[in-house]
Amino acid sequence: MDQNDSTFGVQLFIYDLSRGMARQLSPIMLGKQLDGIWHTSVVVYGEEFFYGGAGISSCPPGGTMLGPPDTVVELGNTEVTEEIFMDYLSSLGETTYSGDKYRLFEHNCNTFTNEVAQFLTGNKIPTYITDLPSEVLSTPFGQVLRPILDSIHIAPPGGNVISSQKNHS
Image 1: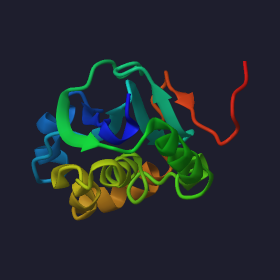
Image 2: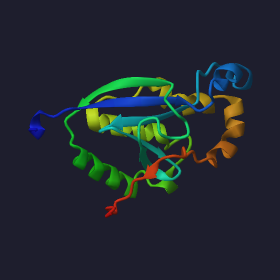
Image 3: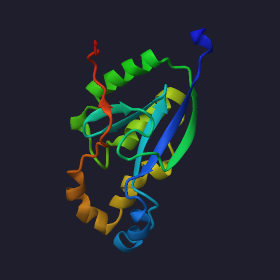
Image 4: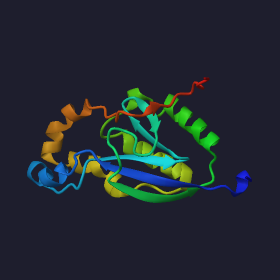
């Protein structure tokens, strides 16, 4: 197969970590409607890639403890090869997206997914996802909860952490 003619589909997997509870409780707790607490990942080359407190991880699509996504968005196609993409992820994992740099509000799975989506397709993920932290923090209750929520590191179980070290079997 000629690599120059190869394109790969890129999908955004969207999960509601609240399992519908945000929709029910946010008007009472925050004074505004939130439809979900979003975790996102990018699916490309037959793998799901995401970021959390453990760093950048991958698994078969829908293979974390979160199960299948609530929504799948087609982000477009990429001509980036899997080898180039894996080198890119390894670089990100050593710098910008190492596990210790995870911050629930400022530097999370959604900032990672947005950056990776732009690298692969030139497209951003929906703003209702990337704007969620500022939506929560703009409320008095969000400000009260911030110190507690800042200590949370979300890392859905079931993924394999991607590192720069090549695994040799």
